[in-house]
Length: 61
Image (cartoon, rainbow, N blue to C red; front, side):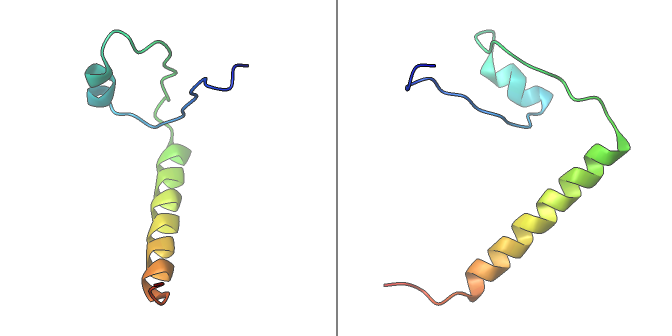
């Protein structure tokens, strides 16, 4: 694999996909599933916790 190849994984809305346009090559839709919503809530909770921890850290000079 070439060193400069870009690989990305993202959760996109249909609007995001539309904005990427016809040059967007690969898309694997995720079916609605009860566990998927739970996963998103867990990710949101982890991000909130990380922000809180960072806010409590002393500012570095």
